[in-house]
Length: 112
Image 1 (cartoon, rainbow, N blue to C red):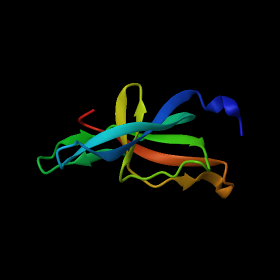
Image 2 (spheres, rainbow, N blue to C red):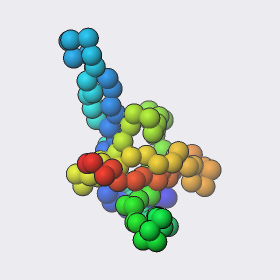
Image 3 (cartoon, rainbow, N blue to C red):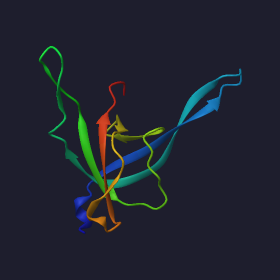
């Protein structure tokens, strides 16, 4: 495994509900980790809608070193890369089954 293939920095964030002091809840985000990674584009992310138009979703594939201190969850976690928010679209895949590298598919959030 060559370390130079990880040349992009990506951040993993987590949302947690917090009390707003009035009986309700707000949302707080916290940085969990930042990692060096390799980013690939996903060319299979086109979907034809009912009108016959093709819609392209901005989907990327991230390869990074497996970390034992981080558990990835699509329920309350998201990634940030170059100021854009990417939601976790797939579970981490163990590349080569050697527990050194994982691969996650992310989709760009339309709101952020």
